[in-house]
Amino acid sequence: MHTIRHSWFLGLLMGMVVIVACGQATSSPIVSETTRPGETTALPSQTPALTPALPAATLASAATASRTQEANSLPADPQEIQFETDDGQILNGRYYPAAISPAPLVVLMHWAPGDQNEWNAIAAWLQNRGLARGSSGGRPWLDSSWFPPMLEGQSFAVFTYTFRNCEGGCKSFTRAAWLMDARAAMMKARELVGVDPHRIVAIGASIGADGAPDGCNWVNTQFPNTCLGALSLSPGGYLTIPYREIVSTLGAEQPPKPAWCLYADGDGESKRACEDASGDNYKSVKYIGSNHGMELIEPDVDPSALQIILDFLKSLFAI
Image (cartoon, rainbow, N blue to C red; front, side, top):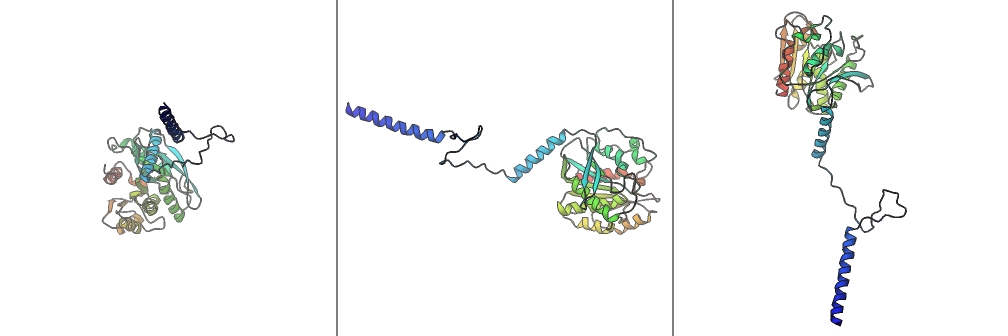
């Protein structure tokens, strides 16, 4: 009987030890008297659990998914955007979200006789989301009725902006300042919601024809392979950098970036600029006459400048 009771006692004692040990292992943190509601104090003997750091690729994927979700809710209507240049100048831009996300982006840079509104119809045509177009005012590039059909099922995001002191047309030539504007625009472009930051191209006319390759190369020096190439309608080295030099610089990038040039044989500065440029990734198209910049976008001009733009985009985006 004594042996049985002793064994029972030892068993009970061992059970209590197990219970106490298990209780300590699974116990909730003790709430102290000085702890505010909702706060807890860990036991001194506990080691706080470490949350494993997420891999960089996982974080990048999550960020992209968040941007995509936000972009998918963007309406077709263009958004007014302001951004700042390196010298503190505030510029006005306009962003046309694509129907897909993340989307390839086309940055359009205007010529000196106008501002970003010169691209209104072409931006809506590239966006391909059914936006209404206004009156052309006698300018054929603002009348979309004759534009070639957009690529089936394709929607591009589009970003336009106005160079400083150019609202309604440029008041004076500030070449070095416009160079800063083009560079700032390309930097801003890659930050737009819903844009694929590695599928951006630049297209411009006249001063914008130089801004497009200049800005393309610049953003690639900061963020490699952001801009895939540049198309220029009547460049002339207007932003202080000779066109042939920037074409050569783009061609030396890895991988090389294509540059296409459209010009009229009677447009002196642009003819010299385009004919002086060369390279394996360079292409030029010459027109008869003396039309300059946006004037090359005419319904009766062959080959169609807008069709060349589509061919350019197809070649870069593998559409």
